[in-house]
Length: 284
Length: 270
Image (cartoon, rainbow over all chains, first blue to last red):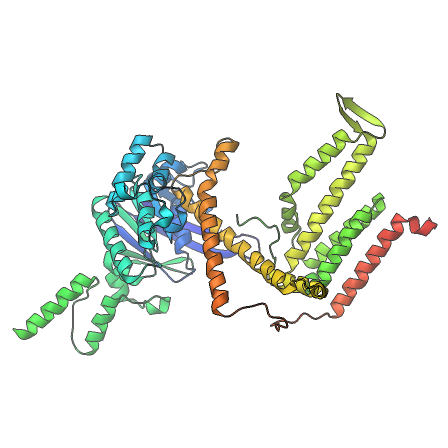
């Protein structure tokens, strides 16, 4: 059990007219090796939930245990927690600050007690891992890179200290279709080799259909469903929750109306395979 | 960051909230003048009562109002301490080296503290009860006479409202950047002064970058819609005085009259 959340509730700006209940009695468990999607309409509490996981929001009601660190303790070891659970925020490129790419990527490792040479080595590894050439970018200013490159560097800045769990908050927001595709295949490749457990917050359902084995559906601060993507997109009423369907599922549905019955696929690859199989079956 | 209340609008349905912003601004100026006219303890008492009554009528919880003092408490304390230690007239109560505490000094310092406190509380009461939009509209309207001397009143008003409009956005931005850097292991509350100041760089640089980006985008959006500060732009919400404002003027005038009379000893009648 890597992450355990029990009866978590949270209220923003308590006792002021801005008071807002963001989370209501949320409980779930994430095991090692899972890739979990958290979905929900804007304001459903997704971001508040994940910010609790690495102690950015102080736990008030409920119990959270992450990597054997009890967050309800009086002084949880936040450094160890944050080293173990990397968090990539929405538009992570806006957090870049250092004068060179190298020192920006080394910021995390140095904060977590790496030595200078270890940090440099970690930075080289992380930058190469996100598909950029360390030696050619290390001395450039992060601000002169393109949007997609900046985001890669920001990801490298998190990967550099080798977290066990990676939390991604809307990793493809604001990217063009090509950039989105690149980002998604990058995340997919990381999931296998580098990081065992990935938690993705998104309202892009294509992303969820493509990568998650499990989906948590948030609605008005409550955990509505804890289910699989195929269950969610093929059995449950997704649109009533203010969410859209992934394109793959939409195509399967449209074909069903034309009496072309395909298996319940989620990923693009499976859809193409199913279509080819269907076409092949008709020709034979 | 969310807890910084200084100058933030606090929504409520009250007499003070519904007043015309011009009334509140003028009353604020009158109050500040009155505070500086104060000499006797009675006049300070009058200022205190006027303020407390205004706060009660505004239906803003005392806690939220007092929060605004927190930001300047340090300045007030420093002022008081310096005034106490270096005021040398009057009956000496305690002295050491060049430092003396005198009876006069204590009185002077306490009055000084009250003045500062009243100034901060009264101005923050205005911003707590008035939306930034209303405040700039009111200011623009009050400054209109300056158009006679070719002062660009509207431009100044729009600059002000843009600046005010962006304060909450930047607070949110700072919040986000801080979280992102904390997630990367940054800590902002450990170490000595220099270490802490250095720790702020990873927040300040992204903040400035984003401020410039937003400014660029806003300027472009204004240009794209052919915005210019032409004279005689019409307003969506016109400011109008109501009976409430008249009541507020009369009360403020009465208050000012009391302060002046206390200062002059009721024109020698007392």
